[in-house]
Length: 98
Image (cartoon, rainbow, N blue to C red):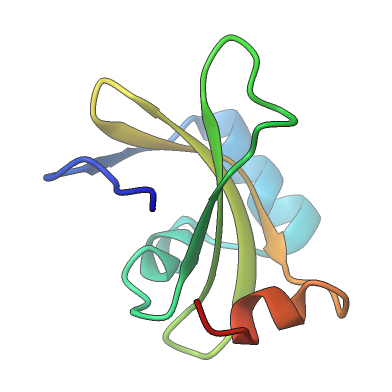
């Protein structure tokens, strides 16, 4: 099981924050909400981890929007790389029991 550092803070790169909003309609607030979803799924992104470890977070916002978030951790800060809606094929990943 993967655990996030405690306490963790969010670091927002303005370029990524703007890209997520313009391209996918996902706000920084929505991304942060997913980290507090008690049913969230946290996975290692081994395929895209190169110079640093990357993680995939699948979870739900307060408005029940399901998001797919890719992030890394730098200096105990969560840095979002991308965030988008879950697609139809990914929904079972959130719904399955761990």
